[in-house]
Length: 169
Image 1 (cartoon, rainbow, N blue to C red):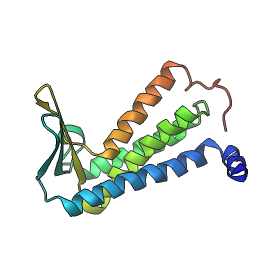
Image 2: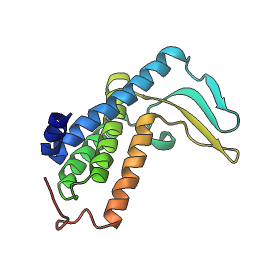
Image 3: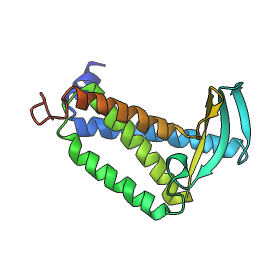
């Protein structure tokens, strides 16, 4: 166990982000494979009445099905966002929160990007209703991106995206 800790402590932020990105990508892709195999398209399974449902749907666009008629553009935008964030990552303080934030975003981005390239759509299945509003159906990759962006916004608020942030690797 001590050897693992020593090896882990010597990894720089990019390598840790790459490892966690792969973990999040595996979780996302596994969830989509299971849903795609088990649930017919447009079928709903209730988890908690009037709150959480599993509803399998295909989405060729992004949030609220925006850009659904421009799949190539969505793929290009995803790649540009990845490259921008990869470059921008080096400006952030090297800590657990920022490592987690970038890993979540990259894992979610790659999860949906793989689906778009291979299938031409993403598999959405988390269907939430709050106060009688049925939110757009989403997936685990979307959740990863959302949480990662919130963490990055918090880091920016704290000034951890600044060139003078301490301890960069």
